[in-house]
Length: 329
Image (cartoon, rainbow, N blue to C red):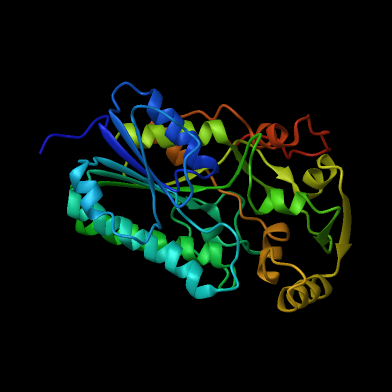
């Protein structure tokens, strides 16, 4: 079977989301791509002769669509970002949606599949090494459903890869994405007037600029690079620096008090961001190394973690002492 190069027809799930619209825009500019299928419950704001917008739930059948349109590559982005109180619903969309997409890929003989996963699958833990590699154990918190569903979704795609060796299956474990219109659990936190720290901990955090992520997604769509890859901007930004840059007040709390109050507020529905497990990500390290993607693709990130955060905040961060903005060696 001839090797697939630039696919002529590409389907993008979650096409009306933050990153979905950006990658669809990029695909529409590529001459080798003849058609883009944008799949999302929400209507697309984009209009283009090469774009076919499909408004449907990610768990609704896709096999006939993929076969009829002769889809050659799929970028799977559809995922519930916020922690839902209805666990069955988030599992239906996140895990059931992934299974449905893979079923359609098998039925249509899709030759290249790209899954956008998350570095949260490694978990934020006291004993994490400074830069986790792709071989590190996945250890997501059982009560942080975004990470657990990402890890389970990954297992589906890995199993599919093992059963369909003729298909390029790529999994990108991305850190938090930032850009002028970013929307994620970090930006939700920054909307609050006061933010907390956990004791004296001040973990380094990574961000990837939306432009770098879109470039990388295109590389994985247009070239065969199967496997798992960490993606993150160079350097890090400490939690305290982030809070200061956002001009918010930081209140350090003892860990038992912080976790207890957050759990109580979640239980009483006083806050709907996340249960207390979400605090792990501002307490313990969860940074990843990107040597693999840099070596295999020859890729060089154009933006640092600091650049990506500044793009969202709309201004430069005041540099703190230390080595928080040092690139990876």
